[in-house]
Image 1 (cartoon, rainbow, N blue to C red):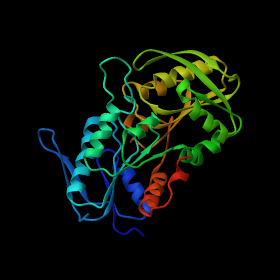
Image 2: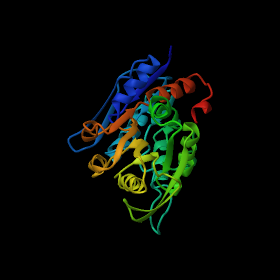
Image 3: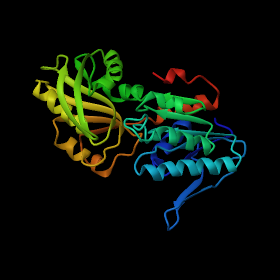
Image 4: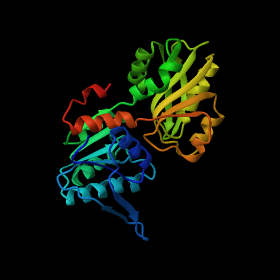
Length: 314
């Protein structure tokens, strides 16, 4: 079905890359990424890619710096091998939360990473649920920003959370996302008024909306340390919610996140495989994983055939 196309994977999420290839009925490209004894990353493309439409599937998740370097080095190797076009498929864009200056003398690292990716030779970006949509503007190359909502809705949420559920935004910044889910699930909307005292520490102050006696679903893009999520779940239960669950695109799950979720009143946490789940999370029955392989595969199919990708944006 695909001619003159190759899909490659870094070490960050080889399983997702293989699933994408399965959906496309195309083989995974042959490449090798390893490290020298001093920690330097090395990559070799083990097939002819001259004039070939190439795709590198690499979320820049933990260890972030290693995975960013893998992406850059693979792109450079493909460029020097005369690949026809290089598309970086980045299911999770690391450094996305450093998208603006929040204090004097601080960097905008999202823009720095964007510059590095373009300098490495990438011609196009496919990303999933950016933490800040304006990151698209950091790139002067075509950028396809996809949303995991269709995969989450079709694979799990419509079956379990339709009509009688309250969709909850864990902060004011996520209201637009929560409203979109609420519309599609035919539920009502609630908002957590949260105030953050310092980085990675949040405090729930108030709940806007009616949650008493209702099933609540908290929707977010990233679960990092899970402090915000767990505080929101506790506040909802104290307000009389019948049950609380959560869904998010990117399961970063750093620090004590998994233990916090296990000990929390959350009934379940639905996430995608944009980032591989850690062993501790895989061992817990609270986590449900939805695959975004078919969504990303369809985006690759349309890009390769020069078809419209816009219908995948919502």
